[in-house]
Image (cartoon, rainbow over all chains, first blue to last red):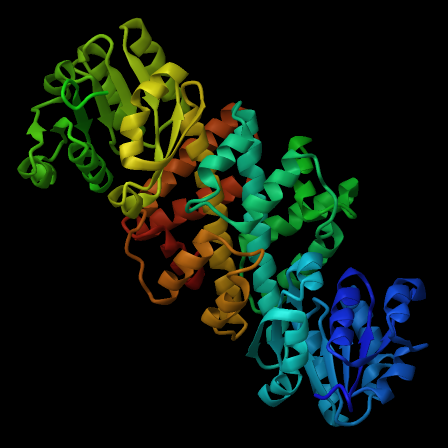
Length: 294
Length: 294
């Protein structure tokens, strides 16, 4: 890739996409952007990004198109809609979906892209808004090795740990493994703190004892202080986490895998969603326990 | 405490007790030891510890008696048996139970001790055999602050993080919070690795992507490599972990707390126990999943 020759596209300018596209611009690339709500792209546009009226207006001009949208249904629309990326991208172009989405959808994109001479990669990320801002994302990639190597320099502009995990879909599967672990660690931290409080302990003092040893986890040490401070702002939205857990559960069922902890986590976050916590951070699970709603 | 004046007792010389008593000896204290199987104390005896034929033979000679036995029933016997510590310890002595045991048993020991002018503390530890060997244990203490301050210098000979968590029982409750978190983190790591393998990923490469970020945990980064190497040696025995989870569950039920993840973990480890994994390390949970026994 060469900033002098290659134009990049970025579709989906939310909290994540904004930072990610910004890093590509700072690396010297001309970046075309499209997102449903144009105002969200205002900062990038005033920094020199170029607006495209639709994916179809953007794709033919780009060597690489990145997508970071919301749900698998959004991914489907952007890639497979009548004016979608598969139909309109320039032959030889790279399509990189950084949305957390379904592994089998990633495989379908890969196959359809191939028939049109396009190179598709699934490349979901972890690290959240802070990771995106600091170009410190973990990027988990599925696809062909040659395609991975071709776009790796761009991924490394946005991320710190960029790893090819296997063929198409492997990036999404790795992200699912990541979310299964997070769900477990977070739920465990919540139950432990609930227990500690009920037992009359000071949860912060408990954290002092258990945070650094074999119970230690990122979720325990980062999310518990937020819960205890009554800070339930996202971070990572309950509604998005529930989407991820449902993708993981569906994929597990297709593989005939029984994962009871994942099932429990899905049930708990579905309840959190039903109780109105969709737009809170995942640490709001604590409130579900505190209110006796589990 | 003063090595020139105070004799210490240590009851229960297993993997943990042996290292812990050894540190007290190295700190200059005369240490009397008793354990059910005398051979287990051989190394300590040849290093200068003095053998006692029973808790009753040991207790009257000690300023502080530490206990590190197996199950709550063992604790009951050592403390409340007709020749137990409560009946035979020297008035003014400190009784420090480092066994992971029931919070309400710790409270009962405290109360009974008080009526005889004894000072009891519950002080379960985490950090395992390695932590014990390196005097790097986390010690979670319940009891009176003055008693805690009196024995703290001794605890600090054996541990690195020594924290008073509250009144009698608070040490045990804190340890339960610790075990709830560990159960969650370990089970989550197992499910994620099971998922990864079923999805055709290389779990070690997955670990590269997810081990350092917001999914990171001690259990993920230390237990998964053992599972993948087929190393199911303890570490921490399944049978002891199951005991801990049952104590936590019983305590939670007494507090009318619903903790579904703890319930699930107890069910999984009970199954692991029933399937013959009692003397394996907790990471053997992975085999339960691999064999479709969950």
